[in-house]
Image (tube, chains in turn green, brown):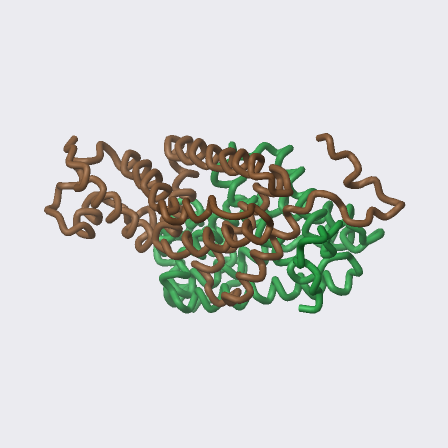
Length: 207
Length: 207
């Protein structure tokens, strides 16, 4: 296997574009070579198998979806209240949506994971770790809400991005913005507002 | 174009399986013929183009995802309260998850919609109509919540099904069950519980 790290990264980035544009079946070494503008045979010197290529693409997409240092620093500033948290969620949705091909490629990877157990194991580990990290981060933040708040936001925002990227006319940008605000407000609310006398729901908070 | 309706339906059902298993690029007339066990050339007598096939597959998946008459009748019975509504959501998630290949095929169609404007228009119309119908149904049900409740549930449950079908080890069945209950409870709650004196959020409910 060749080891030039810049070349490897350029090939993986090219693979992301191929995957988003052509789908999983279109992701061949030859298509990656063409997309990266390198001689035929280059990609096959960098990746042992297509499985290997799929797995490395997954890791690279998550790497590219991380916030930059400025964003991370800004996110740590100021009061950690619901309004600030909603701002972070807007920033997150916009950041992920902006890497259009990366997110579409991730969806392709998920579908391909139903066919490739090795890829499924890698994605499962990565995503479960991300969810757990978000839960831990939320727990120490002092914000209202619990682990279900974090997971339900993760679910709702992921499909919101799917909707925006695959069928962009379903929701306007304004609707997307308002949905994020309402999702944060309601999902961080763990205590029921005014429990009706005839319901037992929401009384047992110990679970 | 041939017009035997049973044959057409069998071909479309075969196309759903091909799409889920092989991805959008694998959905060829020849693959559909093979999956349906009919002579080569049959599918091309029933569908003018691959666009036509993709569009008809979309319509058929939604048709097969509809509840049967027994479920519809049962859903209309009894008191329409949050607990009943949560039951409906459990039934919905289980019904959609059970049609594994249909849901995976829908994800493939969404990705293909980024490449096919005609398919995108058909899916957009269909899904927007479904969302609007769900909102209308919810409005007349007398249940708490508003249109944002309906849309946010739609978003969260869709990604929950994606998770279950593509990376089934992320959440256990028990976690999925509990997440649905919490999602219903919190998203149907429109009034903030105990507004802190220093916040203006949630006061203007007229919008």
